[in-house]
Image (tube, rainbow, N blue to C red; front, side, top):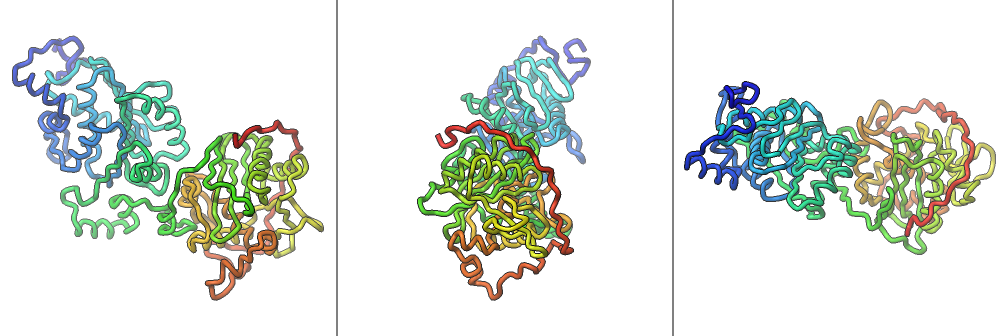
Length: 540
C-alpha cells in the first residue's frame, strides 16, 4: 500500500492527500474544539476481555480531560486502577493531532511505564480513521513525530530528562513515586521553561505515597499557594466500587494499604518513629526568608535563647550537611530555621554556622562529631573562636554528658552512639506527639515521615535522607541533660513532664532498641585545620 507508513495499513505516511466529505469536515472542526467529542466518537482502545472497543468515558474521566484542556497547571490525586491511563491517552492524542509544532513529554517514575503509556497512545492512533491522522515522520519505541510538527517523547522522570529541551506539554505519571531529590532537580530544570510560556502545560497525575514532594505540591495547590489546580478522584466514582468492594479490598490487603492506594490519604511510611496521625497534622508553611539552602520561619527575637544542632556530610553530593535552629526560650520549642545542602565544603560549613549562630543571639551550638564533624567543631572553636559550643565528657557507663568543659575526655560536640540515639529518639517522639515542639518546615516533616524502625534503631527509609531528623534526635538527647536546663533557665523535667505521672528513666529502653552496655564510640581520624574564606552577606 503506497500511502501506508512502513507498510502498516493503519498508519498514513507523510504527504498523502485525502479528500474530505462534508461530514468529515464538520467532524474535524468539532474534534478540534472539543476533546470529549473526539474521544467518544473516534478513539478506540484494546480491552483485555472485549478486544477493540470505543473509549466510553466515565464522568470523572471527562472531568479530568476538561480540566487538563482548560488549565495550564493541574495536579491530580487518583486511586489505583481507576482508568487514569485511558483518560490521559485520549487527551494527549487530541493534543498531538490538533496542535502544530508542539513537543510533548510523557514521563513516569520508570522508563518502561512511560513507554507503556506511549504504546497505548500509538495503538489508539492506529485505529483512528486515516482522514483524522497526521502523516507519520517517526514511530519509535520511545518517541513519535507527526506531519504537523508535533512529537511525543516517553522516558523516566530524572533531573536531566527534559533539560535543554522545550516542551509545550509535560505529563508526569505517578510523580509521588519519583525520589525526592530527583523530583527537585527535575523541577529546577524544567519548570522555569514551562512557566515562562503562555500556553504551555504541566499535568501531574499520581496515587499518593507518603508525605513527600507530591504531598507538598498537593497541599500548596489546595491552599492556593501555587498555580496548580487540584483535581481529586474518589475511589467510589469508579463503577463497581461500593462498600462491599471496599471491605473485600481491606480483607485482601490492609486498611492502611486501602487508605493510601484507594482512599488517597497521605500516610507516613509504616513503623515511623512519630505516629502517622501526628505526622498528618504537621502543617508546613512558606519560609519568610530563603537563601542558598537556608530557610528561616520567624524573626530573631531579642532576649530569646536559640540552639543550633549540626550534622555534617562530606559535600560530595551524597548526604546533606544540615542544621536546625530551635528557639528554646519556652515550651513548645520552635524550629525557626534550617539549613540543608549536599555540596557545601566542610571547609566553608563552619563559617556559615558561625554567621548564623551569631545572628541568632550567639546561639548555643551542638555539633555531631562522628566522621568529619569533629573538624567542624574544632574550626568553630579554635579558628573562629566561637565560645558557645556544647562540650561533652565521658562519664563511664552513664555515657556522654554535657558539661562546662573541665576535666579529662572532653570534646567539642557529641558522638552519636546507640545510647545517645536511643534517648534522643524517645524524647523526640514525645516532644512531637505531645506538641511540645513546633515544626513548620516541609523538609523536616518529610524526613520525619520516612524515619523508620530498622533492626534495633531508626533511620531513613530507602531513597530518603535523615540528616535533619537526626539533628532533632540530638536535640532530644540534649534537652535531657542537666546542663541544658541551667543554660536556658528552663527545667525540662518540671515543665515538659509535669503532666506525666513518672519521670522517664534514662536507663529504660524504648521499643526498637537494644543496649548491651558497651560503649560503641567510633574512632575518628583527626583532620587537619584549614583557613577559610569569609562568607560575606549571608543575610544581605
